[in-house]
Length: 356
Image 1: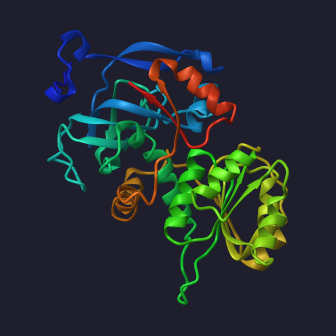
Image 2: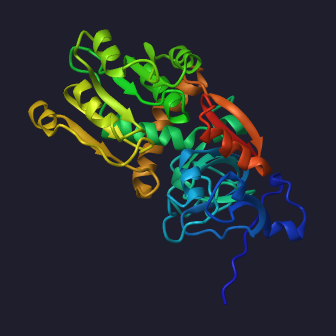
Image 3: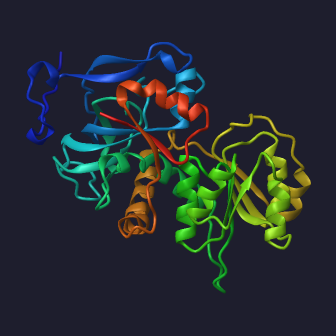
């Protein structure tokens, strides 16, 4: 039998022996509605090679957590069954000198991290290469809202989608479906910060106004307006170069008709359903690209590369106030069910965060 001993930094304020090896967590007791989320007690997770242990201050809430709670998003083998893919807190253990440590992180340092799961807990592990120093001036709650959305937006819009500037300085255009979501407010701000014209859809006038306040040229109420005709009128029938789509379903064929020649659709969720009837001649004749990806299954090396790009190109913009965190509501972790209910009802503009 093998035992692992680890050091809990005194800064973590953990001074009770029984608590040292146990923690509170929010578990999914069975698949179902939000009330299946319950506070439980679990062993503090054991580190795997390349990981650090983080004393969690706050945990971001994401749509994937809801899918997992309902049984529609199975966790990868060997991953914690506790939900939660992004956290902020303090590193309290990890062999930081023996693994790749691109940001020279240290024990006791405040970080935000993209986890493989287990974020709804007092302690969580994360690959060191998926941890970033918290931008100067941000609270733990603000920092917990960053990893999942910022990694997702960068890896899709800028890496896969190649949103770019041509040799004449012309900036490609972006349409964000679901602009008031956590992903949406991040995508709008990030593209706008780099000078790209952005359009966004949302479900009411308040949300459309919020999108415009963050940099969208036009917020489009998808319940009362046809986003295809609105965007075509605003672009003189050219359309857009890139669409970030978390809807799928019947949206896809309409989006193909809205793309400029050589345009790209980046599918990251299927809130509108997993089946679509599309006009393949649009794809063939106009060199269009329809692609999809999920962040969680991607290898650590890819996420490490994204982390570096965020640190170099986006973190300075956050510290300068050019890109802001948008927090809709903060819940105590024990009220995670209420947080899930709010997200499912679509009430939020920006992120919902749990605090420990």
